[in-house]
Amino acid sequence: MARGPLIDLHRRSGATVELIDGWQVAVRYSQQPDRTGNALVDLSHVPTFEINGPETGAALTSICGVDVPLRKIQSNDGRHVYRLTPSRAIVFGNVPSNTGAIDVTGGWTSLALIGPDAERILNKVTAVDLRERTLPVQACCQGPIFGVNTLFGRFSDRFELHVCSDSAEFFWDVLMDAGAEFGLRPAGIDVISGRG
Figure 1 (tube, rainbow, N blue to C red):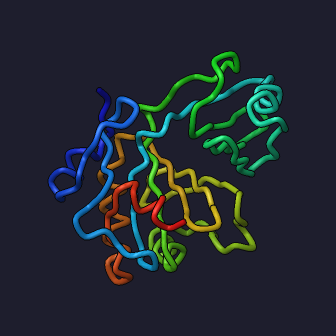
Figure 2: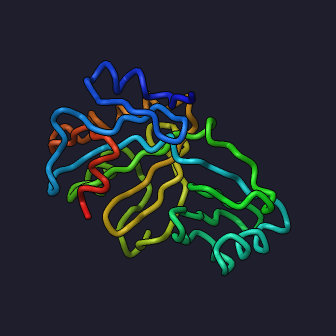
């Protein structure tokens, strides 16, 4: 049984924790935000793989059916592929075993920041330009949040934020503090499926 770095925080905060694919996961909070509210969701249980080297493009083609352009995200089959450099990509979700991808799940913490004020919340804690014309939907970039190197992914309904697991609790607290004025609430993964 695996546990993400935030599971004790979720338990202390009253989240319902269930076992999903061998991981302890916060599935819901007693006071989940409604469909129009701002929510912070822990996705640390999502399998995470890294692909490095000169064959990165070929590996991505075998996984996605196409090579993924630089700083773009390809989403299919329940996975998100972030192309960081010509020779490096991160895959959030399962990959076929013959791709040369290295499982780095325990080294990453992934969070979804959902809601109408997600960009405004992030603007309080980073100098990275997250305007949609700079970081369009299905694009990614890297930059700091309070000194923590962060991989940003923009989707139509949320930002996904990926950091090293040893910074997870600090990172969670920074985002919750920044979102307080916008009514940001912690939520379990149920809130993602509840938003359509």
